[in-house]
Image 1 (cartoon, one colour):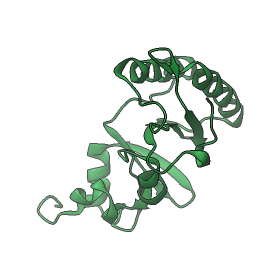
Image 2 (cartoon, one colour; image 1 turned 30 degrees about the vertical axis):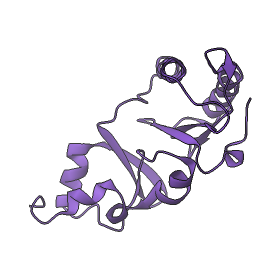
Image 3 (cartoon, one colour; image 1 turned 90 degrees about the vertical axis):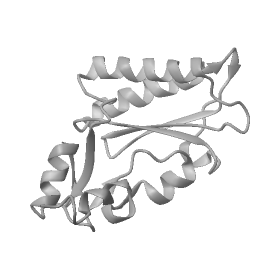
Image 4 (cartoon, rainbow, N blue to C red; image 1 turned 180 degrees about the horizontal axis):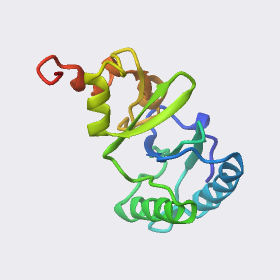
Length: 166
């Protein structure tokens, strides 16, 4: 069953796929149709999954599943990754590169390698109060409260440790 993202319970499992570039509005519209079609066919051993998806800031694809009704299995997770890989090919983007991170700079979103992020911290271009995207949140409650936060409140805080900052 296809749900709206805000209808998912807080315990719902969430996956965030960050694009290395912003999608155009036209691409977002097309991706949203593809996501809805994927969700309609997303199953676990033949049982329909109650899922939701959205594109946030034209840059992030967020998938969620209400595991209170039917939990995801290895095969259903594989199906979602295959779907994401298809989007990567179709739109010439990287969505599965976990060696990149993103942050806000004014009103824009910057995506950089972890090494570049560390360099920007050392040069004081990224500060502890810089808003980052914590793409490792696990459920909807964490997504709502801890996804878009100051770096000092996410896993990014390790880059500000005085022993690693030169």
